[in-house]
Image (cartoon, rainbow, N blue to C red):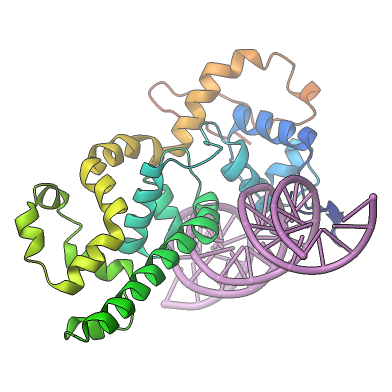
Length: 254
DNA sequence: AAGCCTTGCAACCGCGTTTGC
DNA sequence: GGCAAACGCGGTTGCAAGGCT
């Protein structure tokens, strides 16, 4: 998948990345970090623009980027966070360890949005059928559209423990409209109420709020494996490296 | 088997924000 | 405060793979 490799007017390569390019970029960033994306490709020996390098690193090469299918828990978190944050994909990805904003955005457009739309249309269809059967139209039934946000608000998703403890008698007291909405979101709600989101989110904050630290940790673990001399690796060091005790990043010394 | 259509996702593009001078 | 460069984000596009006819 992806785009055909091509070159822009400046002779910079566009399109799909080759394994060799990936290797160059990965090795370079693991060695030196992303000190300046614009200049980085020159030093790394890549005929790419900095933006392209950054994107490739962030979405594909970065250590701990999780590939593969989403778990239901992850999908539920995305749905819930999308209700709260809208299309703030980077904010959503910050709560999902190993998932990138681009990946979440793609997954949303190709899977989750579709799934929600199906649930929505199913619910609306059921309402129409039941209305015609009963000949009854309550005020709440007149609502044209049922967005997940409305459901979340109606059912107070911010307090899952209450839902978890809801008894069947309580549910029976809900209005006709709310019951249908409940039905629509049941699968989502079950997971949200039974999955403690906060600990998961808290546990991921440390990693995601310190992405470069994570890179550096990876670097520290693997620097010895990159045994070839820097210049032999096909790229140039932008600076002489040195560590300041107690600091976790590099200082350039031009 | 061949052509067309749909799907999934990598990558690009434009623009707003942040940072440094 | 103003400006330019760099960064980061979100929307959009392009294309390969698989499904369908």
